Length: 254
Image (cartoon, rainbow, N blue to C red; front, side, top):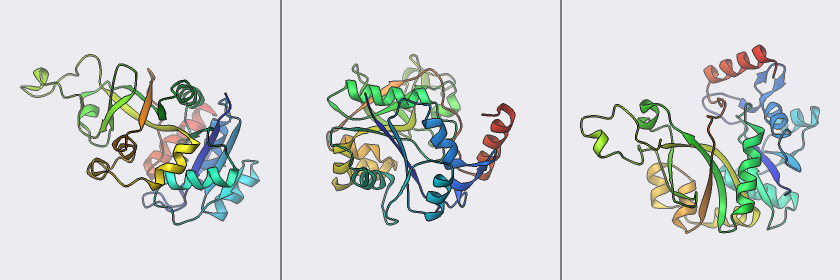
């Protein structure tokens, strides 16, 4: 099953300026992400950026990159433009790999693409893994997801869901069973849905939770979820994150 990996990359980052070009063991981070994605089964890997500097860095390391507009309201809008520029067919599948995930598991890319291809009723696919710590379950920066019997997402939330009523009466000290699920921010889309998504009105729940995927659900689109046993490698949002990832690459020569 052919699919395309799109990696959106913007230089504008408040917490880590010029993030896509950050040096990780001698290569720009965006190139490291593309190299990891190239270990998946994708037929095409393309960086979508609004920066000439990012495009030049990609070209220098033989990574395909295209220039997109700089005024997109969201990453999904940038992906939709990239699909148009690349001439991807409406029935094609695109996997969105974030440009700050240099340790992305290539098999996870394959798994979300395969899941979407196997779920004709779904417009999107994503991933989740079991939460192991109560502190993660209660952390609003950790997005949780609950699934139905068909492994489709019922709801995403920053709140601790599902709420364990009986186990929380005296304060939550352990996790319910089965373990709650942490959402992993990787998405597979049908190209036709990527073109539709920017035209959909923002949903009230999306604005409350600050979670864009809730817009798709609000408008009746289903999201299939692959559950993986292991947590993803760390992403890069801050200088401290970057230092940790740089140390991992240096230690393991990834």
